[in-house]
Length: 294
Length: 238
Image 1: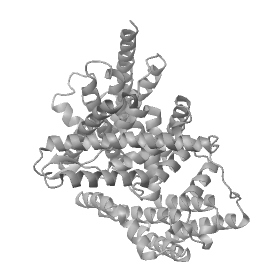
Image 2 (image 1 turned 135 degrees about the vertical axis):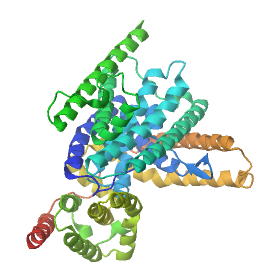
Image 3 (image 1 turned 180 degrees about the vertical axis):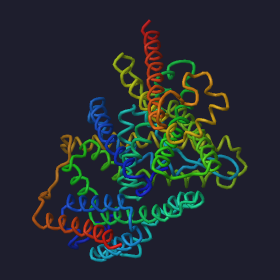
Image 4 (image 1 turned 90 degrees about the horizontal axis):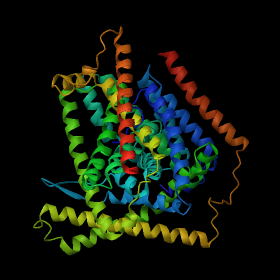
């Protein structure tokens, strides 16, 4: 789902463009450092591959078919930084040449798909690709890559004031969930083929401690999606809370009743949630890396 | 599109940076407009159409190509309409169509390599631009390969396709993608070796000089004043 121009309100697209510039700059630097320059044509050709891959249909059943989106697959084969650059290039070509997605909304689309979606797809692979849960991690990564970008896009539209009736919202979430599952299944099937052709295609995550910071940055970014979503759809979170999903968390219903205005309350609850998630992820990362070191 | 961008009109001859800045001014003034949107959108539409004609591009085809955004916009416009926000629905449709038309005009009046070079001097990372250029160059090569594979699959199993279980069709599609991936990878390596053999030093060399002339400056200034002036005038008048 590529957001065209004219959908997002000015503060939303401007802020996301400003945020996307350093993100892409960092990815470009990192991708350049991580690869010898032989990879420049490789990245371009892989971008073309993702375009072409959309012509090969996968049967879903009931006469319909879907196709690969590719964010998770690229992250597994080229590594996260290079995958982010390839996805940014794809989005730029789609916006410029095919009028698919806006130019002012390019920052939003890049953050949703090339940064957040790609990282969400890469994280499970980063943690579990070496163990018993490899297949599940690949599947989960594919699912998350689509789901996270769709949720971020919906939240941005909502923040821009695009209203959506509740039923319609639920239906669209359900549809996104189905397409996310399909992406996971396709990613897994293609990864298995690639492994049987040449295992050298698959990127091996570096196991040094330095990548810990990278993982933490990724989790913070993903947590921001959650917060963005929560502030855009307070009703949906409320509903989840009523369904006793969130009851055991300390911020049930995202309410910190002692705070004054609704806006303050939301911001502070969101920040507190962010800090909690960040802490939990840091701890997990530490434990995991210690385990690996031992 | 590639053919369109190789014209020789006044617009085609302007520097890529001048056109990029003019397009950005258009997009931003349009995106931030709220009051008197119907009148402004009609005026901007007229400006775009006359520029397309002045650049010697086929107007009808351009209008049709830009309509590619409409299906997506219509869905969200319909949702807004159902939610009782018909003003927003119309604005979304208008803004997304006009923006797409403006970008279409920019890329049809500027060859992509020139546009990317202009973006580089405007500060976009060179590494990203090189990836974009390679992507665009090999887009049609790899797509053709995918088409060949699809045709081959149909030729081999077209009539029994329905008889195959969904699962095995899924597997064969995954196999096709894996093979396409491996071939693209091989392609990339061959391309890189050929480039090294011809003395590639990490960036592209260009023959044409890249000068921002007084005419380009005048074009940028005129476009900016026209677009902003129109908006100010419309908002003051309504």
